[in-house]
Image 1 (cartoon, rainbow, N blue to C red):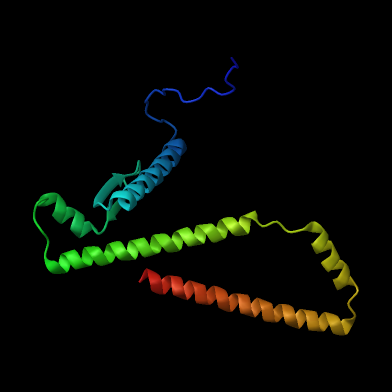
Image 2: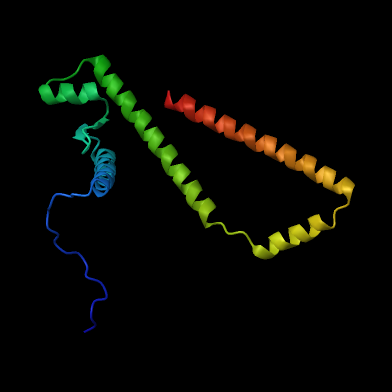
Length: 169
């Protein structure tokens, strides 16, 4: 039988965190975890959730799905059926949230793909060797081409930002 290399999961004592920086950091991490778990439950069971927390500095934070009005109405009258407009608003909100979740998942896949791509060092060295051999005319062409690429990237970024902003509205 081999010995364990780590201590594994252990029971920790619950005690007030005295250091203010540690307290704020811990609150922030736990709040994010709580919201993430609530989002997972919503995605899995399609339920209404409302969370209100106060930070150690008494700043309020909230998380509601689908909306604060719907959650509060449901809390005060759990067996009442909402109006047709209310039900349509809830359904529309849920659809928009699912669409945003799909967009977020796609962006995470793209980010993961980009971070996993490695640049071949020999390819970069070869590129620099070719650039060193440019004559002044070639350098001017190369510089103008870089300016074109820079402008194109700025346009794509602006278009992406505008699309994201329109989708947020």
